[in-house]
Amino acid sequence: MNKYFRIKEERNSLIKILDNLTFEEKKQVLRKVDQSMINSANKVLANDNPPGELLTKLPTKFRSEVQAKAVHLGRTLFVRAEVDELIKRKRIATIHIVR
Image 1 (cartoon, rainbow, N blue to C red):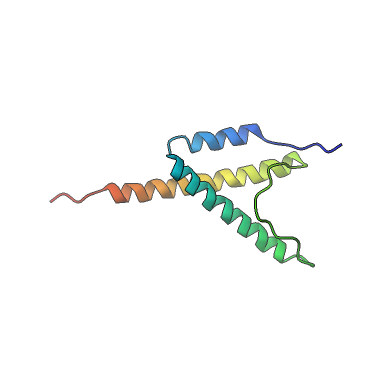
Image 2: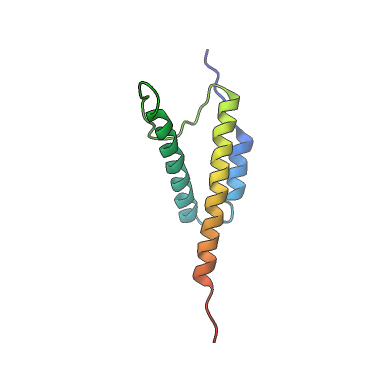
């Protein structure tokens, strides 16, 4: 029997990070993060001999807890960085020079 791991704490931490954003901003951030993680994983898979099958989406079930935590922690780091960039861009857009 296969046993799969899903890390609930990591998913809840992502929810807390994205809590103050609108739905469109959340969607934009998660798409960008997931695509960058998929692209980096595909670069690693392309270097294998012979090349492995390329990913089209991130897995949701993991066979080992360590693998699940590694993917979720990486995703959390990328999301935090992307949210910071989004807030920076919004702040720059809203600052007006007063003369």
